[in-house]
Length: 395
Image (cartoon, rainbow, N blue to C red; front, side, top):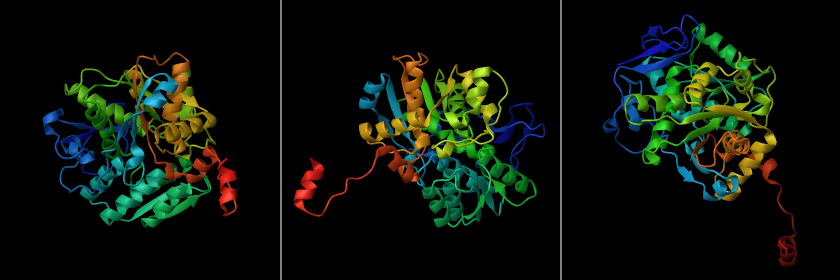
Protein backbone atom coordinates (compact mmCIF):
# COMPACT_ATOMS: atom_id res chain seq x y z
CA UNK A 1 0.00 0.00 0.00
CA UNK A 2 1.26 3.45 -0.92
CA UNK A 3 0.24 7.05 -0.43
CA UNK A 4 1.52 10.53 -1.22
CA UNK A 5 3.10 12.52 1.62
CA UNK A 6 3.65 16.29 1.59
CA UNK A 7 7.22 17.13 2.63
CA UNK A 8 6.07 20.57 3.83
CA UNK A 9 2.92 20.04 5.93
CA UNK A 10 2.71 16.26 6.22
CA UNK A 11 -0.73 15.91 4.60
CA UNK A 12 -1.51 12.56 3.05
CA UNK A 13 -3.22 11.72 -0.24
CA UNK A 14 -4.25 8.51 -1.94
CA UNK A 15 -2.72 7.40 -5.20
CA UNK A 16 -5.87 6.92 -7.26
CA UNK A 17 -5.91 10.28 -9.04
CA UNK A 18 -3.36 12.56 -10.74
CA UNK A 19 -1.72 14.86 -8.21
CA UNK A 20 1.62 16.67 -8.34
CA UNK A 21 1.70 18.90 -5.27
CA UNK A 22 -0.06 19.29 -1.92
CA UNK A 23 -2.89 21.76 -1.45
CA UNK A 24 -0.39 23.81 0.57
CA UNK A 25 1.90 23.94 -2.49
CA UNK A 26 4.46 21.54 -1.04
CA UNK A 27 6.13 18.77 -2.99
CA UNK A 28 4.88 15.20 -2.63
CA UNK A 29 6.73 11.93 -2.25
CA UNK A 30 5.56 8.33 -2.29
CA UNK A 31 5.48 6.50 1.04
CA UNK A 32 5.03 2.78 1.76
CA UNK A 33 3.47 0.92 4.67
CA UNK A 34 6.22 -1.71 4.80
CA UNK A 35 9.99 -1.29 4.89
CA UNK A 36 12.10 -3.01 2.21
CA UNK A 37 14.01 -6.25 2.70
CA UNK A 38 16.80 -7.70 0.55
CA UNK A 39 14.83 -10.94 0.35
CA UNK A 40 12.12 -9.10 -1.62
CA UNK A 41 14.39 -8.48 -4.60
CA UNK A 42 14.49 -10.96 -7.45
CA UNK A 43 15.28 -11.10 -11.13
CA UNK A 44 18.07 -9.46 -13.11
CA UNK A 45 19.52 -6.12 -12.08
CA UNK A 46 17.18 -3.39 -13.28
CA UNK A 47 14.34 -1.14 -12.16
CA UNK A 48 11.67 -3.83 -11.75
CA UNK A 49 13.93 -6.06 -9.67
CA UNK A 50 12.75 -3.70 -6.89
CA UNK A 51 9.03 -3.91 -7.68
CA UNK A 52 8.21 -4.48 -4.00
CA UNK A 53 9.27 -0.89 -3.27
CA UNK A 54 7.73 0.68 -6.37
CA UNK A 55 4.23 2.22 -6.43
CA UNK A 56 2.51 0.06 -9.03
CA UNK A 57 -0.46 -1.79 -7.58
CA UNK A 58 -2.67 -3.02 -10.44
CA UNK A 59 -1.27 -2.40 -13.92
CA UNK A 60 1.53 -4.31 -15.65
CA UNK A 61 4.78 -2.40 -16.02
CA UNK A 62 5.65 -0.71 -19.31
CA UNK A 63 9.30 -1.64 -19.66
CA UNK A 64 12.12 -1.47 -22.19
CA UNK A 65 14.46 -3.33 -19.82
CA UNK A 66 15.84 -0.20 -18.23
CA UNK A 67 18.34 -0.11 -15.40
CA UNK A 68 21.11 -2.62 -14.80
CA UNK A 69 23.59 0.04 -15.93
CA UNK A 70 27.31 -0.62 -15.44
CA UNK A 71 29.41 0.61 -12.54
CA UNK A 72 32.99 1.29 -13.63
CA UNK A 73 36.11 1.31 -11.47
CA UNK A 74 38.09 4.17 -12.97
CA UNK A 75 41.68 3.48 -11.89
CA UNK A 76 43.44 5.84 -14.31
CA UNK A 77 41.04 8.71 -13.69
CA UNK A 78 41.12 8.11 -9.93
CA UNK A 79 44.93 8.23 -9.92
CA UNK A 80 44.95 11.43 -11.95
CA UNK A 81 42.37 13.25 -9.81
CA UNK A 82 43.56 11.83 -6.49
CA UNK A 83 40.54 10.03 -5.02
CA UNK A 84 38.85 6.66 -5.61
CA UNK A 85 36.04 7.19 -8.15
CA UNK A 86 33.43 4.70 -9.35
CA UNK A 87 31.23 5.77 -12.27
CA UNK A 88 27.61 4.62 -12.55
CA UNK A 89 26.89 5.22 -16.24
CA UNK A 90 23.19 5.89 -16.70
CA UNK A 91 23.75 6.68 -20.35
CA UNK A 92 23.58 2.93 -20.93
CA UNK A 93 19.78 2.90 -20.47
CA UNK A 94 17.51 2.17 -23.49
CA UNK A 95 17.17 5.79 -24.69
CA UNK A 96 20.57 6.80 -23.37
CA UNK A 97 19.78 8.49 -20.05
CA UNK A 98 18.63 7.94 -16.47
CA UNK A 99 15.21 9.32 -17.39
CA UNK A 100 14.19 5.84 -18.58
CA UNK A 101 14.11 4.68 -14.96
CA UNK A 102 11.55 7.31 -14.12
CA UNK A 103 9.50 6.84 -17.26
CA UNK A 104 9.01 3.10 -16.87
CA UNK A 105 7.36 3.77 -13.50
CA UNK A 106 5.65 7.04 -14.49
CA UNK A 107 4.07 5.72 -17.69
CA UNK A 108 3.07 2.49 -15.94
CA UNK A 109 1.34 4.54 -13.25
CA UNK A 110 -0.37 6.61 -15.95
CA UNK A 111 -1.83 3.40 -17.40
CA UNK A 112 -2.97 2.33 -13.93
CA UNK A 113 -4.72 5.69 -13.50
CA UNK A 114 -6.44 5.39 -16.87
CA UNK A 115 -4.59 8.35 -18.38
CA UNK A 116 -5.13 8.95 -22.10
CA UNK A 117 -2.23 11.32 -22.87
CA UNK A 118 1.11 12.11 -21.21
CA UNK A 119 3.31 15.18 -21.51
CA UNK A 120 6.48 16.87 -20.31
CA UNK A 121 8.62 19.95 -20.65
CA UNK A 122 12.16 18.98 -21.51
CA UNK A 123 15.76 19.96 -22.03
CA UNK A 124 15.99 16.81 -24.15
CA UNK A 125 16.44 13.54 -22.27
CA UNK A 126 12.98 13.57 -20.70
CA UNK A 127 11.43 14.03 -24.15
CA UNK A 128 13.28 11.03 -25.57
CA UNK A 129 12.30 8.79 -22.66
CA UNK A 130 8.67 9.95 -22.59
CA UNK A 131 8.31 9.40 -26.34
CA UNK A 132 9.80 5.89 -26.20
CA UNK A 133 7.74 4.70 -23.24
CA UNK A 134 4.64 6.38 -24.61
CA UNK A 135 5.16 4.43 -27.83
CA UNK A 136 5.65 1.18 -25.91
CA UNK A 137 2.43 1.83 -23.96
CA UNK A 138 0.52 3.01 -27.06
CA UNK A 139 -0.33 6.28 -25.34
CA UNK A 140 0.13 9.70 -27.06
CA UNK A 141 3.02 11.85 -25.79
CA UNK A 142 3.34 15.65 -25.98
CA UNK A 143 6.61 17.52 -25.42
CA UNK A 144 7.28 21.23 -24.94
CA UNK A 145 10.85 22.27 -25.70
CA UNK A 146 12.75 25.57 -25.53
CA UNK A 147 13.38 26.43 -29.17
CA UNK A 148 17.02 26.08 -30.27
CA UNK A 149 18.16 25.02 -26.79
CA UNK A 150 17.97 21.21 -27.06
CA UNK A 151 20.61 18.93 -28.58
CA UNK A 152 19.32 17.62 -31.90
CA UNK A 153 20.09 14.00 -31.03
CA UNK A 154 17.43 14.19 -28.35
CA UNK A 155 14.94 15.98 -30.58
CA UNK A 156 15.44 13.27 -33.20
CA UNK A 157 14.77 10.55 -30.62
CA UNK A 158 11.50 12.12 -29.51
CA UNK A 159 10.32 12.63 -33.09
CA UNK A 160 11.31 9.12 -34.16
CA UNK A 161 9.27 7.62 -31.30
CA UNK A 162 6.22 9.55 -32.42
CA UNK A 163 5.86 12.31 -29.82
CA UNK A 164 4.18 15.61 -30.69
CA UNK A 165 6.89 18.23 -30.16
CA UNK A 166 6.11 21.91 -29.66
CA UNK A 167 9.07 24.31 -29.55
CA UNK A 168 8.49 27.47 -27.53
CA UNK A 169 10.25 30.80 -27.78
CA UNK A 170 11.29 30.63 -24.13
CA UNK A 171 13.38 28.65 -21.65
CA UNK A 172 12.73 25.31 -19.96
CA UNK A 173 11.15 26.86 -16.88
CA UNK A 174 8.56 28.60 -19.06
CA UNK A 175 7.85 25.31 -20.85
CA UNK A 176 7.30 23.57 -17.52
CA UNK A 177 4.98 26.32 -16.27
CA UNK A 178 2.78 25.97 -19.36
CA UNK A 179 2.77 22.16 -19.19
CA UNK A 180 1.63 22.29 -15.58
CA UNK A 181 -1.09 24.81 -16.35
CA UNK A 182 -2.41 22.68 -19.22
CA UNK A 183 -2.33 19.62 -16.99
CA UNK A 184 -4.44 21.48 -14.44
CA UNK A 185 -6.97 22.00 -17.25
CA UNK A 186 -7.01 18.26 -17.92
CA UNK A 187 -5.06 18.20 -21.19
CA UNK A 188 -2.65 15.47 -20.10
CA UNK A 189 -0.69 13.81 -17.27
CA UNK A 190 2.66 15.46 -16.54
CA UNK A 191 5.71 13.23 -16.25
CA UNK A 192 8.32 15.78 -15.30
CA UNK A 193 10.08 15.29 -11.98
CA UNK A 194 7.31 17.27 -10.24
CA UNK A 195 5.49 13.92 -10.56
CA UNK A 196 6.40 11.90 -7.43
CA UNK A 197 5.79 8.57 -9.15
CA UNK A 198 8.43 9.24 -11.79
CA UNK A 199 11.06 9.80 -9.14
CA UNK A 200 10.36 6.38 -7.67
CA UNK A 201 11.96 4.76 -10.70
CA UNK A 202 15.05 6.92 -10.37
CA UNK A 203 15.65 5.92 -6.75
CA UNK A 204 16.63 2.47 -8.04
CA UNK A 205 20.01 3.98 -8.99
CA UNK A 206 20.79 3.88 -5.27
CA UNK A 207 19.63 0.26 -4.96
CA UNK A 208 21.71 -0.94 -7.90
CA UNK A 209 24.77 1.01 -6.78
CA UNK A 210 24.69 -0.71 -3.40
CA UNK A 211 24.35 -4.17 -4.93
CA UNK A 212 27.19 -3.47 -7.37
CA UNK A 213 29.40 -2.31 -4.50
CA UNK A 214 28.59 -5.50 -2.55
CA UNK A 215 26.45 -3.52 -0.10
CA UNK A 216 29.34 -1.25 0.89
CA UNK A 217 28.00 2.31 1.13
CA UNK A 218 30.22 4.83 -0.70
CA UNK A 219 31.34 7.79 1.37
CA UNK A 220 29.91 10.18 -1.18
CA UNK A 221 27.57 10.11 -4.19
CA UNK A 222 28.09 12.92 -6.70
CA UNK A 223 25.74 13.76 -9.56
CA UNK A 224 24.59 16.60 -11.81
CA UNK A 225 21.70 18.83 -10.76
CA UNK A 226 19.25 20.24 -13.29
CA UNK A 227 15.68 20.17 -12.03
CA UNK A 228 17.02 18.46 -8.87
CA UNK A 229 14.80 15.38 -9.13
CA UNK A 230 17.59 12.81 -9.44
CA UNK A 231 19.54 13.75 -6.33
CA UNK A 232 16.24 13.75 -4.44
CA UNK A 233 15.28 10.33 -5.76
CA UNK A 234 18.64 8.69 -5.12
CA UNK A 235 18.70 10.11 -1.58
CA UNK A 236 15.22 8.67 -1.03
CA UNK A 237 16.42 5.27 -2.18
CA UNK A 238 19.31 5.27 0.28
CA UNK A 239 16.98 6.55 3.01
CA UNK A 240 14.49 3.73 2.48
CA UNK A 241 17.24 1.15 2.73
CA UNK A 242 18.62 2.88 5.83
CA UNK A 243 15.26 2.87 7.60
CA UNK A 244 14.75 -0.74 6.52
CA UNK A 245 18.01 -1.73 8.19
CA UNK A 246 19.61 -2.83 4.91
CA UNK A 247 22.42 -0.25 5.32
CA UNK A 248 23.63 1.40 8.51
CA UNK A 249 24.92 4.70 7.12
CA UNK A 250 24.07 7.24 4.44
CA UNK A 251 26.44 8.57 1.76
CA UNK A 252 27.05 12.30 1.54
CA UNK A 253 24.83 13.49 -1.30
CA UNK A 254 26.72 15.99 -3.43
CA UNK A 255 25.22 17.93 -6.32
CA UNK A 256 26.99 19.73 -9.14
CA UNK A 257 25.49 22.44 -11.34
CA UNK A 258 26.89 24.24 -14.35
CA UNK A 259 28.05 27.71 -13.35
CA UNK A 260 25.66 29.38 -15.78
CA UNK A 261 22.68 27.56 -14.29
CA UNK A 262 23.46 27.24 -10.58
CA UNK A 263 20.67 28.80 -8.49
CA UNK A 264 20.63 25.97 -5.96
CA UNK A 265 24.36 26.29 -5.28
CA UNK A 266 23.90 30.02 -4.71
CA UNK A 267 21.02 29.44 -2.30
CA UNK A 268 22.98 26.89 -0.29
CA UNK A 269 26.07 29.09 -0.10
CA UNK A 270 23.98 31.97 1.27
CA UNK A 271 21.73 29.71 3.38
CA UNK A 272 18.86 31.63 1.88
CA UNK A 273 15.99 31.30 -0.58
CA UNK A 274 16.58 30.13 -4.11
CA UNK A 275 16.84 32.99 -6.61
CA UNK A 276 16.04 31.64 -10.09
CA UNK A 277 18.30 32.32 -13.06
CA UNK A 278 16.07 34.05 -15.61
CA UNK A 279 18.34 33.20 -18.55
CA UNK A 280 20.44 30.14 -17.66
CA UNK A 281 23.26 29.41 -20.10
CA UNK A 282 25.65 26.48 -20.32
CA UNK A 283 26.94 24.01 -22.88
CA UNK A 284 25.52 21.32 -20.59
CA UNK A 285 22.07 21.63 -22.16
CA UNK A 286 20.56 18.80 -20.11
CA UNK A 287 20.90 20.87 -16.91
CA UNK A 288 20.25 24.31 -18.38
CA UNK A 289 17.51 25.01 -15.84
CA UNK A 290 17.16 28.25 -13.88
CA UNK A 291 14.42 27.35 -11.39
CA UNK A 292 14.71 23.70 -10.28
CA UNK A 293 11.29 22.53 -9.13
CA UNK A 294 12.70 19.93 -6.73
CA UNK A 295 15.05 22.31 -4.95
CA UNK A 296 13.36 21.74 -1.53
CA UNK A 297 13.88 17.98 -1.83
CA UNK A 298 17.47 18.48 -2.98
CA UNK A 299 18.22 20.74 -0.03
CA UNK A 300 16.93 18.02 2.28
CA UNK A 301 19.05 15.38 0.56
CA UNK A 302 22.19 17.47 0.92
CA UNK A 303 21.48 18.76 4.39
CA UNK A 304 20.44 15.47 5.96
CA UNK A 305 23.59 13.68 4.74
CA UNK A 306 26.17 16.42 5.46
CA UNK A 307 26.65 16.71 1.72
CA UNK A 308 27.31 19.78 -0.37
CA UNK A 309 26.81 21.37 -3.78
CA UNK A 310 29.13 23.19 -6.11
CA UNK A 311 29.22 24.58 -9.64
CA UNK A 312 31.72 24.08 -12.43
CA UNK A 313 32.49 26.08 -15.54
CA UNK A 314 31.78 24.82 -19.03
CA UNK A 315 35.54 24.48 -19.53
CA UNK A 316 35.84 22.31 -16.42
CA UNK A 317 32.98 20.00 -17.34
CA UNK A 318 34.16 19.64 -20.94
CA UNK A 319 37.65 18.76 -19.69
CA UNK A 320 36.09 16.07 -17.45
CA UNK A 321 34.04 14.80 -20.41
CA UNK A 322 37.22 14.33 -22.46
CA UNK A 323 39.08 12.66 -19.58
CA UNK A 324 36.25 10.17 -18.99
CA UNK A 325 36.32 9.25 -22.68
CA UNK A 326 40.07 9.19 -23.26
CA UNK A 327 41.24 7.77 -19.92
CA UNK A 328 38.46 5.25 -19.28
CA UNK A 329 36.48 4.78 -22.51
CA UNK A 330 33.30 6.13 -20.89
CA UNK A 331 31.38 8.38 -23.29
CA UNK A 332 29.02 10.88 -21.66
CA UNK A 333 27.24 14.07 -22.65
CA UNK A 334 28.45 17.38 -21.13
CA UNK A 335 25.96 17.52 -18.23
CA UNK A 336 27.03 14.06 -17.09
CA UNK A 337 30.64 15.10 -16.74
CA UNK A 338 29.79 17.75 -14.14
CA UNK A 339 29.90 15.02 -11.49
CA UNK A 340 33.56 14.22 -12.20
CA UNK A 341 34.44 17.89 -12.66
CA UNK A 342 32.80 18.61 -9.31
CA UNK A 343 34.82 15.90 -7.57
CA UNK A 344 38.06 17.40 -8.88
CA UNK A 345 37.07 20.90 -7.75
CA UNK A 346 35.90 19.83 -4.29
CA UNK A 347 39.03 17.74 -3.76
CA UNK A 348 41.22 20.72 -4.64
CA UNK A 349 39.22 22.86 -2.20
CA UNK A 350 39.64 20.32 0.59
CA UNK A 351 35.91 19.54 0.80
CA UNK A 352 36.44 15.97 -0.40
CA UNK A 353 39.10 13.98 1.42
CA UNK A 354 41.48 11.87 -0.65
CA UNK A 355 40.62 8.81 1.50
CA UNK A 356 36.94 8.86 0.47
CA UNK A 357 35.24 6.38 -1.84
CA UNK A 358 33.23 8.40 -4.35
CA UNK A 359 30.47 7.19 -6.66
CA UNK A 360 29.79 9.51 -9.59
CA UNK A 361 26.54 9.23 -11.51
CA UNK A 362 26.86 10.11 -15.19
CA UNK A 363 23.40 10.70 -16.54
CA UNK A 364 23.46 10.64 -20.34
CA UNK A 365 25.30 9.04 -23.26
CA UNK A 366 27.91 10.78 -25.40
CA UNK A 367 25.76 10.46 -28.54
CA UNK A 368 23.00 12.54 -26.99
CA UNK A 369 24.97 15.63 -28.02
CA UNK A 370 27.55 14.82 -30.72
CA UNK A 371 28.06 18.50 -31.56
CA UNK A 372 29.29 19.18 -28.04
CA UNK A 373 31.54 16.12 -28.22
CA UNK A 374 33.14 17.39 -31.41
CA UNK A 375 33.68 20.80 -29.88
CA UNK A 376 35.33 19.33 -26.81
CA UNK A 377 37.57 16.78 -28.51
CA UNK A 378 38.85 18.51 -31.65
CA UNK A 379 38.67 17.93 -35.40
CA UNK A 380 39.69 15.20 -37.81
CA UNK A 381 42.87 15.24 -39.89
CA UNK A 382 42.36 15.67 -43.65
CA UNK A 383 44.58 13.94 -46.22
CA UNK A 384 44.62 12.89 -49.88
CA UNK A 385 43.78 9.24 -50.62
CA UNK A 386 47.42 8.19 -51.12
CA UNK A 387 49.79 6.14 -48.99
CA UNK A 388 52.31 8.99 -48.85
CA UNK A 389 49.69 11.53 -47.75
CA UNK A 390 48.35 9.28 -45.01
CA UNK A 391 51.87 8.47 -43.76
CA UNK A 392 52.62 12.20 -43.62
CA UNK A 393 49.35 12.92 -41.79
CA UNK A 394 50.12 10.23 -39.20
CA UNK A 395 53.67 11.48 -38.74
